[in-house]
Image (cartoon, rainbow, N blue to C red; front, side):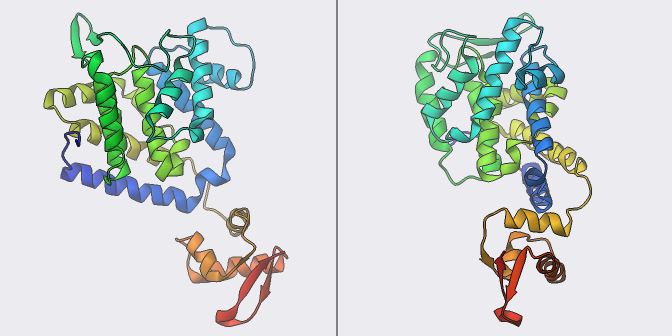
Length: 316
């Protein structure tokens, strides 16, 4: 059964904006050409996601832990960071459509922090804000069935930008674990998105969630009251939109001819045409492609054979 939500004009507009910016990122090959940027953004993601849950460690301290250096701080906070690093290091090993994979990720995330790591809760749970219960999660006996239905929904043909937001919200609503629900919701949305859009593996959108923490919880609460995830979907799409803006601002100048050729040859291709080259770099003109290829021939990176529309390039 499809979870309740509505594709509003606002949601459609945000999907268009996000899709356009993903295209800009891909055209710039930001994630392929800057490992330093990827590492920095991964650290931002871990720090932001854990800070939402009250972790006190800084970006500098998390960097030190990644570099296997000793860090002074609360033992629980250090354990949370170490676990999160391990989960993010294994992101590519998890199957976002597989419930067992989901439970395995939780086991790694919460090892040493809770006795039931990797298992659904067996008792009732609620979210308390101040002196009031802000959200009372479904009965523990319903959790396995609700989560199975949610994973079935992931296999529908809905666009991934929507599905990832819906999963995030519905998982938070079900609250399947005794602890670690917020972290798992954000991790799994990242995993779902990166399967279709690799840039999300290193896009630190959780930094904006952390900066807008109150609005994040308000969006969850509003969707609870409306009994559908539409409001939360719009909120998260706006977060993704702004995160892509920040990533594009970090870009240092346009990609050069030699950088393009280096990226292309790194793909392992041995023989190709100008048409293949332009299909790889969809935003460049035919004149730019011809100049790139001419330069690469002069530098003896590739060898040209044939003439005109029969031209083929061989990797030296």
